[in-house]
Image 1 (cartoon, rainbow, N blue to C red):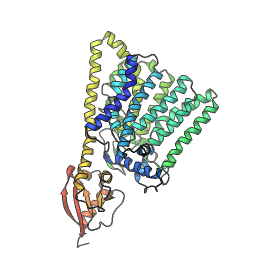
Image 2 (cartoon, one colour):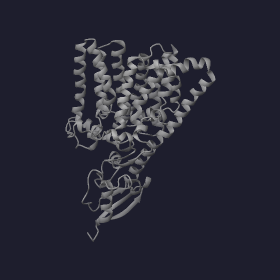
Image 3 (cartoon, helix red, strand yellow):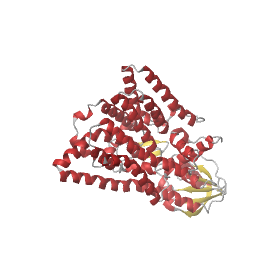
Image 4 (cartoon, rainbow, N blue to C red):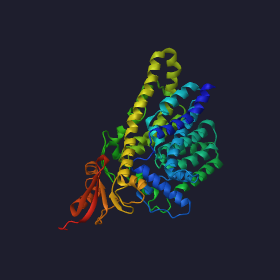
Length: 486
């Protein structure tokens, strides 16, 4: 009874801890271009729901799913501030991930010890740095993961419990997951195929049609959200940039500039087992794995989902550790029988050794959290510091040419006209406007591309008066007349 109570309380505890952590760190969840783009889209969707015209299309409208900013826009109807709403959704979603993880464990291992499930969820998932970061930040990671897990749970109920009606909820949740994070399609496609085949085998034609119909209706949300966006789903970078060649590469040149990673994509896929953003002691469970752990048809389905998702990520010309969080959760689900043996038999026959292993897990996870959260907090501090420094220096309505931090400054300085140096090449920089740039930080990645080409044009052909050196190596210039030799 006590274990059951703790399992039910764990999601609420995670929500409370994340909320207190955000307050203690004075962290509003905003960092980097993606987070601020989600905030911009949430503002735009709230205005759209209020009957206003949609804001002009941006690159983020084409690349990002709209489910997360829509959820934030809906919370604003309750009077919640837009930034608070988006961070609250991430925090609540992290709690939902813990609840859904417990439901999946009960489905896949109904006879397992409750203490094993509690320790597994409480240590290996609740403390995972990638999940903590997802729950604190204004990003779609936590909500997308929760929807993916909910779709998996309902889909596996069709397979394990012979509940054909669960296919409908799986289809709806899967559609919302894809609307929130497009890459969810790669993970959920094998599940959809297995569920459909099971319904066909059982001749549940009505439920099969209903699942297809309601899943399609759920996907209509995507088309409403992207109404007015010229790019179609088939033109998304997930499909346009995917290539099997990327599996062997570690240097990529894309619209995001030239990026170099330590390992090729094929090895990056093993980060859920060997990166401080996850659980470094986890590979120790492989010594307790048995072949029979994967005989269950649902386990084979999860394995297919994992392989499909990793193949999708391996073919993309970039690496991002947070994209691997869904893969990590599936690995945890597959390795639970090994963990159950560790807790059930290890504490009985090798108590000291087992307790030592269990003590190492939270220690490494706490260090991993400090390591993984540090750059996020540093970026947030930089953005807010830049905004505070620039606020008294930029007159209302002034024009600022910038790159990288301009998306963040648009959130904090709405009265300033931001001109992005990446979007296009500029022939003219009007006198009296301002330029914010960080040449040492941007030179290598953006050599030969719009940000550096625009900077070189402004520096060569216009008089730039340095106004102030700002935190992080950024410098504010006021643009004067063109040089006389032009």
